[in-house]
Image 1 (cartoon, one colour):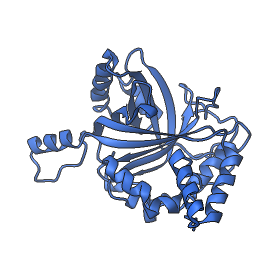
Image 2 (cartoon, rainbow, N blue to C red):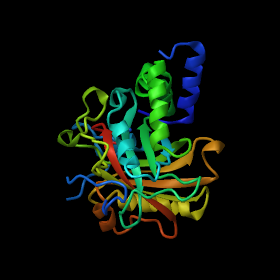
Image 3 (tube, helix red, strand yellow):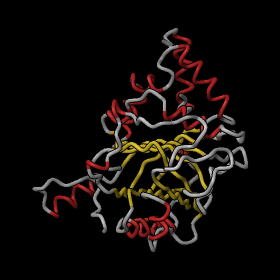
Length: 306
């Protein structure tokens, strides 16, 4: 199945030249959905012997991440969204086994009231995005240049890449767009081992029939502001408050990794257990910011959280 990034397409072309081409609420208009106290906050779970001071130091030193997002326009036709999600669900991947991996989800854009997925209205908009959280850029680069990446993107064979491209043509509108971020001020709740999603071999085993969109597993709000503006301080203050609320998973401030990845704007990302948990948080949204809303599915994570 198609991960669909520009760097993937360039890799496919290189392999071809070398001859080695050897993944809320409300009804979706294009598909039918299948039915389906406060946590302590730290970036990584402290060991039993850790003192409060050492835990705080560890959280502070571990607050940066590297985040890769890949944005898609899924076609408006009936069944395209469900077919797109099925391709992600069935893709061969060992992402969760990679060194430095922290968190993943495939997000579909929804309206503020939770209905969707929302259809794109212009060439610049998207209605799906993947998000992968890494410890650092080096971890991402190792995955990007290794065999695991090839396996998840056509298997490194000519037929695999061809099938991937054909599948994309049937479900996507236009080319996917990758966007990379240096993530700062990351706050995450550790995950209880009993709550970890099952991921044998490093990927989820989720039933997907290509007719029904997948059940939501989390809810994300993404807000944007100009870099260096007063809104950035408001973002970080909102994040600190959100982190104390029940249902909070993680949050971070996204700074584009390069000029081509942004237009001078930074983003605050918050991920919650559900839309209702987000709505129950008193100061979840930074005042005056432009916000987009998403449902996440196919969640992968580690015990440390994001």
